[in-house]
Amino acid sequence: MQDNAPPRTYRVKSFGCQMNVYDGDRMAELLADQGMTAAAEGENADVVVLNTCHIREKAAEKVYSDIGRLVKAGREAGRQPMIAVAGCVAQAEGDEIMARAPAVSMVVGPQAYHRLPEMLDQAAAGKRASDTDMPADAKFGALPQRRKSGPTAFLTVQEGCDKFCTYCVVPYTRGAEISRSFNALVEEAQRLIEAGAREITLLGQNVNAWSGEDSLGRSIGLDGLIRELAKLPDLQRIRYTTSHPNDMSDALIAAHGEVEKLMPYLHLPVQAGSNRVLKAMNRSHTVDSYLKVLEKVREARPDIALSGDFIVGFPGETEAEFEETLRLVDAVRYAQAYSFKYSSRPGTPAAALDGHVSREVMDERLQRLQASLNRDQLAFNQASVGSSCEILIERKGKFAGQWLGKSPWLQSVHFEDNDGAGAAIGKTVKVELAEAGPNSLKGHLLQPVLA
Ligand code: SAH
Ligand code: SF4
Ligand code: F3S
Image (cartoon, rainbow, N blue to C red; front, side, top):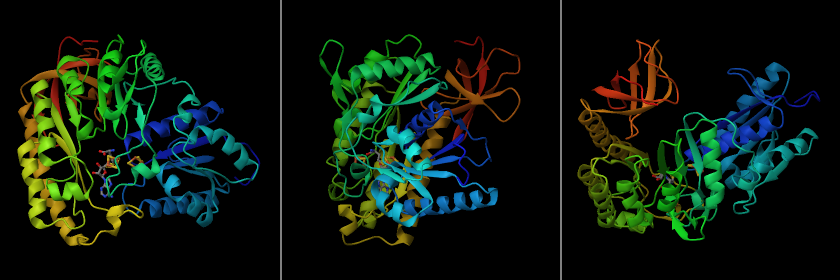
């Protein structure tokens, strides 16, 4: 800022995964705790936090162009914002950002953002500040209490990754795996519920590697945490993401068949359908071991909606190996999935491999893969037409009387309440599913409204 007035408004822009959304919300709470308010849509903010993602290429370039845009808007308004770069690009490239972008006054890594207020004070006094230290778990204890929540909320239970897939930057940007303590998590879940949450999604880079001790000092895994959270009366739904196939314990699989509040949805990335490629990726599972896990999960919870992540064009991937991915997809029939072109990340072992696949071939493979995935997603949605299910209402729709929410299988469903049956954000209603598209369903509200 050019004048000396203290910053009054903030904006936090989060990119990347759900954990960044969680982190971004926590940073917004930290700034609100300093007496600042969120800038209105379209208004220049006094403090802008760019909460960045480093997972695929062009991440850093995007940050620099965002900074350029902010500086230009500040020049036009005659008041420059204080800019903080947070998240995984800050962790990976903090020093370069400080050197290349003088407009940035704070660089704050994913394990250091609880220090944002004091860094802001330093920056206001004209001192640029950077913190990319990685003290395990320190930030969680230093964050403000949760005060406000929509009907669905994220809760980070585990952070970091020890798996070192050869293409991936996450072990370097998020650090080693840590699990937050059971007591801290139950407490934060209770607060979120008091603040309005009805559904909690437990987050971690390898969330099913979570481990801890329950209130009696017994060692438990994620299934134990889920069973405990399911006892909280006003919590209706529990989800978790992202899981690694090798950490899918029998106890967690059993919980899918036993814990009613645990929703029938599992995101279990596989990445590729060829054992040679999986080995080169250092995935430490095979196609067969992955399918075996899915078989057990389907046995425990036959209606489960399965989701996955895929990378096409990993270095050395042949046409025949890619076709194995298509065959895997045909065998599994995912309800939903994410697919990406391989992106070479500096410093990862895969970046040094031979046989990089051309952009054209990657484009073509991605198109074919997505055609299969879209086919299955539509089929999954169509198969639910005619049945009825509970929808947790998340927001109002575009049209008067229209509401939007999610089914237990994480499908987006919209429906109308023209008779004033009492639909409202945060309520769970019974809806008959009537029409299916690839990305959403239309339903009819059944009386009476449940909760
Ligand atoms: N921890 C999670 C998510 C990691 S990032 C997990 O292991 O499942 C989310 C997804 O991004 C990955 O599952 C992978 O499909 C994709 N991804 C990661 N690194 C990538 C890269 N270098 N190029 C393309 N996609 C990548
Ligand atoms: Fe990345 Fe692999 Fe860890 Fe997932 S398991 S975060 S893909 S290294
Ligand atoms: Fe991106 Fe970091 Fe998440 S690299 S995907 S924001 S862990």
